[in-house]
Image (cartoon, rainbow, N blue to C red):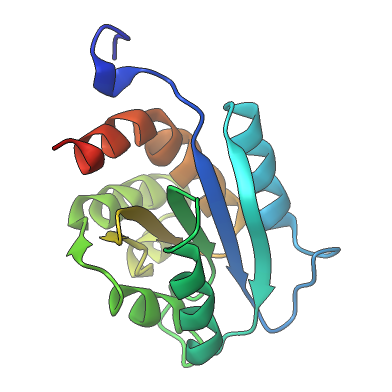
Length: 166
């Protein structure tokens, strides 16, 4: 894309990141560390980074705080699978005012190319709540790298322009 249209201008965006896990700590979590590195290398900033257990109430509380914060983009990692502990997608989706089905479709296509059939099983999703973009990603480093480098970071300027235009 060119930088000739206002929607394509590269402006600093403020992110909040949530890792949902019953076992990871800030010291042991490599996916969140990668997310922070990629986001900051792209010229954006991190307002909040948190790890919460796979608990729908705690996930909902964190997202509800994030959607009234100064962050423009919320990225969650973990809880997108089909297991009984995977609560993030269901919890976040309940807060969406709009869903972005193309995000999950494209992410699964890219994941299939990278990891095969298990990439199709992801329930990765995205939506909008209170004027914030919310992306729910699987908990792996590969998923984080793919989503940020191939979808979110290249498109963030245009997405926010579309979201905020009057």
